[in-house]
Amino acid sequence: MIVLKDISYNISSNEKILDNINLDIRQGEFIVITGKSGSGKTTLGSVINGLISHRYEGTLTGEVYINGKSIRDLELSQIGNKVGTVFQDPRSQFFMLDSFNEVAFGLSNMRLNKDEIKQRVKNSLRVFGIEHLNEKSIFKLSSGEKQKVAIASCYAIEPDIYLFDEPTANLDIQSIFDLRDILRELKQIGKTIIVLEHRLFYLTELLDRLFVLNEGEIVGEYASGYLMDIQKKHQDIRNLYLNDLEVINQNQPKIEETPILKVDKLSYFHTKTENGSILKDISITAFGNEIIGIIGENGVGKTTFGRLCAGLLKEKSGDIFIQGEKYTHKKRLGQVYFVMQDSDFQLFAGSVKEELSIGKSNEKLTDEEKNRILSKFGISDFEDRHPMTLSRGQKQRLTIATAVSSESKVIFFDEPTSGLDKNSMDLVSKSILEISDADKALFVISHDYEFLLSVCNRIIYFQNGSVEADFKLNNDTKKKLWKLLSKGR
Image (cartoon, rainbow, N blue to C red; front, side):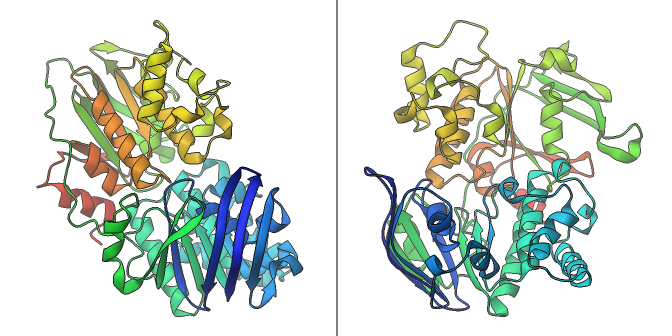
């Protein structure tokens, strides 16, 4: 189905991205390609779907064949009908304003008749359980909902080959298992599937072969029956099996009469009536030494809660206290630090090093302190680069580094490991643990079970706009965490 012969790609004479890739993928085969951030996974995907040969600058050598035809002899639209791609950032493939028309967009370009388009869109929305998003604006979708719409758009085209680039980066565990079921169905009907992914636990029962990339080269190939060998040889990839993971953070909260953060009966509505409620009567207290995981399904209001606490949204009712003092939403700005899931919205300086000084009210950090922080996150080599030239993972680590260096007593991290490899996840975990002390309350909004176990000592579960569970996280309660994340699956 797909043949890559001696593929190399570089964007300059001294910056090679792919190096002599040879790969044969048979029809109906399920292939997983993993490796640390920057190893070339996304670039390899862009070779397969024709973007590099038809759209991107740089030098591509070697040959790519799809069904025996060279992609150099095919129009990009022809390749698109054969290879359906779901990109890592779903926004990059959106063209319409609402979910229905977004899923219909590719079908319209295929010039299908109106009735067939309607039927395919309806079926795709049903398969992914997002019929309720039918008329919803793309701009009002959560990150996970956007990801589902992007996958449904690909599914509606019914290509022979499916290429997924980090498809679970923004999905909750339940949605990941739903995706796994879809992938299983696609495999059973003979579709060829390629998944570029860091998170591997949901793919172990589906894949036929797994390839490990490092610095643009294939450094490992494993058949499905030999996956246990991977973890021993490649310690920088995510765990394939989650059963034996332990809770790392054993710190006890510093319970005092006055909590660092107190949220009292907080409510927020999209409309003037409670029918549009997102959060209702949320009451939470947080103390020093606490790293609190905020969990719940996509769209349940986790990010909204963090943005309310940070003053980025104004509550409809309720109060928020910081160290005993009541703060309005405007006064909370700067007092509560919110690290956004999408790093592009939070980078402002002209260089990576300058970014650490943005928003600092006290004395500026010294160059030595900045270098130490950047080294901790593995981005010191890019200190003079413009932040927007970094990779997604590097941007994410930079925004977290700015939070780590802030003076805020309360910090929210929104999906800080989205799309991160194991090394980057470990760096983030270690740094968050290091700043946890008696004077700070930290919140982590996440679906990532592996990450939550590595950093949190308390879990708060949101459902239907309310707090449904609030418990200490330890090795006795980690099963409860998994059940809440996976809905018992």
